[in-house]
Every structure is written in C-alpha cells, then in structure tokens.
Amino acid sequence: MLIIGERINGMFKAVRKAIETKDKKIIQDIAKNQVAAGARMLDVNVGPAAADDVAAMQWLVETVQEAVDVPLAIDSAKPPVIKAGLKVCKRKPLINSTTGEAEKLNLLVGLAKEYNAGLLGLTMDEKGIPNSIQARMEIGLRILACAMEAGLATDDIYLDPVFLPVKFGQAQIPIILQTIRELKTLSDPPPKTVCGLSNTSQGCLDRPMINRTILVMAIAWGLDSAIADPLDKDLMDAMISAELLLNKFIYCDSYLTAYRKAF
Ligand code: THG
Image (cartoon, rainbow, N blue to C red; front, side, top):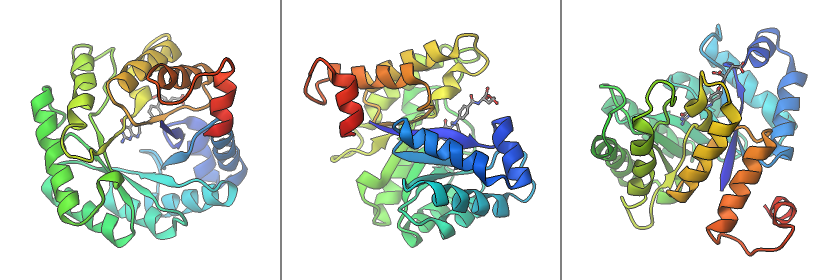
C-alpha cells in the first residue's frame, strides 16, 4: 500500500507560516519525518491562503526535494499552480488532481503527458460531488477513458471517490467505500484507487480512531493508496495488519517490524 504523506499542506498552521517566512528547515523536517515513518510519496499543497501560490508551489517542491528523494503528488485545484510544481519535479510526479469537468480534464491529461506524470482524478465535476455510486462511477470512467485515450498507462491513473467528513455526510461513507471496489472493475488492468483519508475525521473528537478504522475498511474494499499521516504510528500499524490479513505478504511473528524493513 502506498502511503502519500499529507503533512506538507498549507492547511496546517506551521506549514503556512513556514511558506510565508521561507523557513526551509520546518518543511524539510516534516518531509524527512514522513519518509522515515513509511511515506513513499509526499503530497505537496501550498494551502488556500498562499499569496503568490505559483511561486509558493515552486519553492515548496524545491525545498522538499532538497531533503528527500521520494516522488511528489502536486496538490492544487488550480492548473497553473500544478504546472509550476511539475516544472521543477526531479522524480516522476503525480498530478493531484483533475475532476471530470471536460476543460480541466483535457488540460491536466495534457500536462500529465507533457511532464510524464501520473494523474489523480476526483470523481466529481462542475456539478459537485455526486451522492450515488453510479454517478461517481460515470465520472471515474470519463476520467479513465480520457487519460487512456491520450496514452497514459492504467498504472499511472489514480481514481479518488472523494472521502467526506463522517460528521457532515455520514450516509455517504458506505457509498464511498463501495465505490472503491466498483472503480477497480472499470478496466483490466484496473486503475489505482486513492483517497484523502483524514477528510473523514475532520471536525471529529477522536480523529485517529476514525482514520484507522476507515483505512482498514477501505483497504478491504480495494484501496491501493492513501494521502494520510504516516506519523500516526497506530494508523501505520493498522494498515500493515490489514495488508497482512488480506494475505498481501507472508506472516511472521514480528510482521510489523519486518514490513517496515521490507517496504
Ligand atoms: N483527495 C485528494 N487530495 C487531497 C484530499 C483528497 N488533498 C488534500 C486533502 N484531501 C488530504 N490532506 C489532508 C491534510 C490535512 C487534513 C485533512 C486532509 C486535516 N487538516 C487539519 C484539519 O482540517 O483539521 C488542519 C488543522 C491543523 O491541524 O492545523 O485534517 O480527499 N486527491
């Protein structure tokens, strides 16, 4: 399972401040800690408040790459900000994200080709986030078809059913989980599935418990990767245990340690 570290995001106060003051050390420490804890890719998002977000993304990507050697997910709702990140990426990036909206989809598929990047698609469009499995699937198929037609490998296409806070959209959670399994049936070989895990617990009291419970369930439904907090050790232990119980690697008594050494 690919864990994409979520913590380099201007949504967090310390990160926002570090971007404003150009404090490299704070960003680089967060990057190193996430990789040491098992993140094999890092999400990079300048946050909603960044003043010059194009320049901020470029600085953030360069700063992270000076500290760690993993590929980056370039996270922004704005294509020009994504492009600024792609331009300075040293390793194969993941575009995070497109939606099913035609203009945006075509633009970002083009950028994925131009920069040899993976493409993450949210199953939402200009009408918003759909309520049903079927409507999410239609958008997922639209994104997958457009990307494959342009020549992207299925392996480089990640579909995200858009995890919502349980506090505000409780009835959506089982629908989102079922969508993961359905998305895996769209093609053979299948696209990859991904989610923003911590969305689910936003505004809740016991966030870590909700995060690790939904992660284990989502893995059982076919989740391949998650933007999540690798510094949450209990979350990582739950992820490793779920993979063990799904027979993804061979059991030994010290499987938690063994997994951390091997992956
Ligand atoms: N799908 C994709 N990309 C995504 C998301 C997604 N990127 C952003 C987000 N969702 C995933 N990353 C986070 C990062 C942080 C939090 C949630 C998701 C988070 N932040 C604290 C909060 O909102 O309470 C910030 C407050 C703080 O601690 O300072 O929970 O779904 N493709």
